[in-house]
View 1 (tube, rainbow, N blue to C red):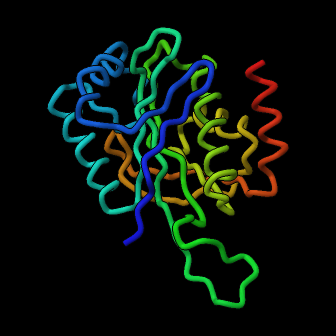
View 2 (view 1 turned 120 degrees about the horizontal axis):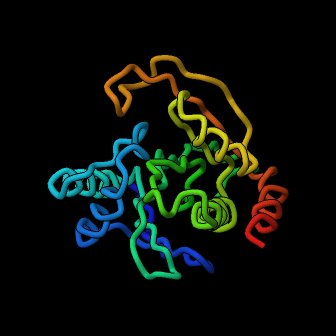
Length: 208
C-alpha cells in the first residue's frame, strides 16, 4: 500500500499543516461560531463529534486514501478550519506508456472536506489555500487531474469552485446522504494539468 507523505503548505495568509487530534479543541471553536454556515457540510459542533471526525480522517490517511490538513490563519495564528486531499489514486500503467511516472506519485486527487469558520469565509484564506494545494498537486505530485465536488444546492460553494478555474463536469444524482439528511445530488468539477498554468496566474492575481 502506497501512502502520501504529510506536508506543510504555507503562504502569506494561510498555513496548512497535517491534521492531528491536538487540533480538535481549536476546530470546535472554529466550527461553533455560527452553525448556519455549515448547513451543507458534515462539520461537527461538539468536542466528541470533532474527535470522531478527526479520527476518521486520520484512519483514511492511514489507509493511504486521504491527506487531511488543518487550516490556520497566519495573521492571527489560529485554526480556522480544515481541508483534505481525498481519493488519492495511483494508476497501473503499462510499461510502454509515455505518461508513466514514479511509483510514489499519485495520478489524480480530489480536494475536498473543506470548511472554514464564518469569519474566515470570503477572505483570501480559501483562495490561497486552494492555490497552495493545487500547486502541490500539479507541480510536486504532477497529477493529471484534480477534482472537486459539492452539494448541488450549495451555490456559494459551486461559485467558489468555478472561480478557481475549474470546469463543471456535471451532476451525479443521488450521490450520497447529505449533511442535512436529504439525498444529495453532487456537482462535480475538475482541473487538468494543462489548465493549471492559466488558473494559477488568475489565482495569484486575485490574491494581489
